[in-house]
Each structure stands twice: as structure tokens, then as C-alpha cells.
Length: 539
Image 1 (cartoon, rainbow, N blue to C red):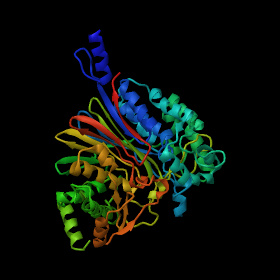
Image 2 (cartoon, rainbow, N blue to C red; image 1 turned 90 degrees about the vertical axis):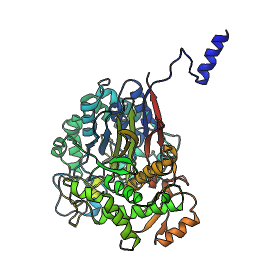
Image 3 (tube, rainbow, N blue to C red; image 1 turned 90 degrees about the horizontal axis):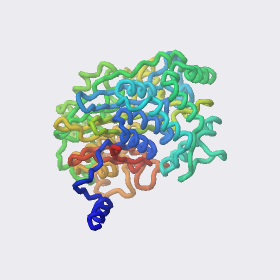
Image 4 (cartoon, rainbow, N blue to C red; image 1 turned 180 degrees about the vertical axis):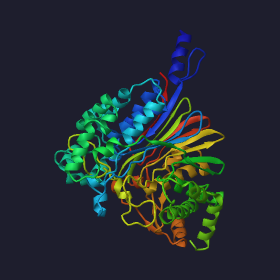
């Protein structure tokens, strides 16, 4: 009896005894949606690898974070396989093949003319066909998202704020309003269940027929017909001829002995890496405590890095290697800091996955602004993206100029940090240019201040671009920081708190990160969103 009591007590307390077995680690998922995180965890626990989980989580974020992702959006993956070199599944969208000669800015911002040809399903289909474990069919990875669309998701604080603050723009289209707003035109409240039965039917068709149904089948014809009838520029041929994603090398740099990998142009990874270089060019004492001095060092590095992106971008989005190599050199960072001292000087979602074998994937997806182009397909239920707004109408010699079949500028900066050939951190963020600032801050915090991923993600953030408007997060601003900002001619700004909770503001991103700390994986979901981070244990 005493032995049986000891066994029961040990089991209750989680103690390890000779004839018990510890749970076997299967992976970790951090995403902006609790439901999507759970989907990924279940895939890992039932024999899936990180690629399987990435496909399932990406689709589950459609219902789980409807303002930021969907099948008419863009998806890019930074992958560090368990064995071999890292690579990028380059999931850029493309501008339509036929664009009118005269285009207005408003046409690129809202409505069907604002959409680029979407990449998400092409990327997920490619990932499944080339890297999946073989333990799940395509349909088995898609159906969890179908169930979420059909059964609904519980509206959390961030979801409610997104509906209430940005969702009102959907009133401009009857069909979109009927899908995303309540019958009286108001936003869904916290705790209410939000369902999308039309999207459930659409995605179930894709589950049964495959991604080609969306690009080349009857669904593609339905999409093209809606666009043609309503003045859109994307055609059936644009969808049918949309290419498989290219596999390219990530760009790389180092930061205080760590190797940092991120996304190449047209994405924003190179800017984030330059910001880290600019931080490294400064004294470690300036950044190793979460205080006013660190925030000033961050602001200075951001102002310079974002300034490079604005005023001296890569020559084009294809042949950028030599230019980026120069921009990411330590000598260039030192020169920029010295010149600075001498006075010369949207909406997205991200998730991270690792598995037991050591595969690590940083996945960033977007329909660009909150709720994209604010227009839904009337019978298929998805929101069109508005990535066309990323192009410049006037030809200024940059690669950002509007042209046919071109990649739009993106701030996506999925990042993997390694040391001694071991993956240490996987992270990324939404929030337009604040993506770059957020990832640089979290990476620096984890390396410079404390290797605690939850603290790194939860630390209050700052942001600035070359206009000197410094945005500061948090309910209070330290007097020392205000004094230092005045010394560097920063103008203090507070972001629009329409979707904030008073302390944390989604304006500053939504970093969902995993970190290998003391030989074990830990995860953090950004408190600025409704997401979760969870480990998976093999069944």
C-alpha cells in the first residue's frame, strides 16, 4: 500500500521514478492565435514535423487572426533544417501583368485594384509536397482551419479591438460587412464567437481538390470573374501562371558572436541586420540594461537603418548581393555611427515552429493592412490583399516603382539566430516598418540584456524612422529618456491607442518567438496580441 501511495504521489507531483518515463519533446509553436497554436501542437504531437505544422498553422491563422492573414495574402518562410543550410521559401506576391497607364494612389490602397496576385497557397502547397513528413495528407492539414472557420473562434481583446477600430472600414462593401461585422453593423465583442461559414466551404474545396483549384480550377475562374466585373486588374492568367516559390539563400550577419539570418530583398531583413550592426558598433554598456540609455541607442540605430532603406535602397530586388554585403559590413556600421555622432547624418502575422528533429521555421504572412483591401469576394468569403500600396507611382529610380509582374516592397523580417551551429532563436513580427524595429529589439534584448525570451518579447519598445518622430511604448516615460531624446532632437510621439490595452500596443509589433535556453526550448507569445506559445509532447 505504501508503495502504491508513493507511485500515486510521485505521479501527481511530476516526480521521476525508476519505472516512469518523462514526456518526449515533440516541438514548440508560438503564434498570434491560441487556436492556431493548438492546431500546430496537435500536428507535432501526432507525428508531424515542423513543415506539417507550418502548413496547418498558416491556414488556421486565417480564422484565428482574420484581420492579418488569409488565402489571398503573402507567405514567406525562413527555414533552418535539422541538417544542412538555411533557406528561404520566397513567397512574394506579384503585381498584375496588366496595369493601366494612369493609376491613382487611392486605387493602390483600397478595393480590388489594390491586390497583388496571392502566394499563400502556392507556398503551403510547395512546402507540403517537398518537406512534409508523409504522416498527414494535404486534406488532414487543411481541415483544422476549415473546422475553425465553421465552428468559430472566441474573440479576444486584440481581435475585438481590431474589429472595432479597423473593421468599420468593411462597411463600404455589403458582403464584407455581413461576414466580419454583426447584423447591426457593430464589432464582435470579447467572448463572442465569430464564424465564417463561407470561408469554411471555400477552404474545404481546397482541402479536397488541392491548391490548384485556387489557381487554375473553377475557383480561379470565380475569382477572375469577380475582379473583372468590379474593375480589378488580376486576371485568370495571372492566377494560372503564378509560379512556384523560389528557394533562395537568406542574408546573414553576426551580432556579438551570434549568427543572425533573415529575409532578403524585397523583404526587410537587411534593414534589421543593419540596425543590429549599428547597435554592435556602440558600447555594450549602452544596451545591456533595459533603461533610457538602451532606448536611445535603439532609436539612433533605427533612425539610421530605416534611413538607409528610404534613401539608399538596394539597386533592385534580384541582383542585390554586393550592395547588401556592403551595407551589412561592420566597417559601414562604424562609419554610419561616426557620421551620426558628428552630425552628418500594416498588418501582418507571424508564427514560429520547431520540432524534435531540430527543424526550425519562421513564417510571416500578410494581407498587408488590417483587413487588407477592405473588400471580400462575395461568394468565396476571403479578403483581398492591398499590397499594391507598397509601390511608388513616380519613377524615382528605386526598385519600389509600380510595374507589371513585380514584387512589392515588404517589411517581413523572419529571423533565426544561431551559435556554434545550433539554432538559438526563431522569431518574427507583424506591423509594417515596426516589424524591423521589433525584431531588432527582441534579438538585442535576448543577447545583450537577458536570455529570457518572455522578458525579451514583453519589454516595452520604441520605434523611429528618418522623420525623427520617436514612438515610445508604455504607460510612463522616464524623465531621463525624455532628456536624452531632446539631446538627439527626437520628437516624442505616442501611437494611436485604438487597439492597445493601455500598456502594450500592437503598433509596436507582435513578436512570436522560440528560444533555446539552457538546452531547452522556451516560447513567448507577444502580449500585444491574443496568441499563445506551447510545447508539444509526443503521444
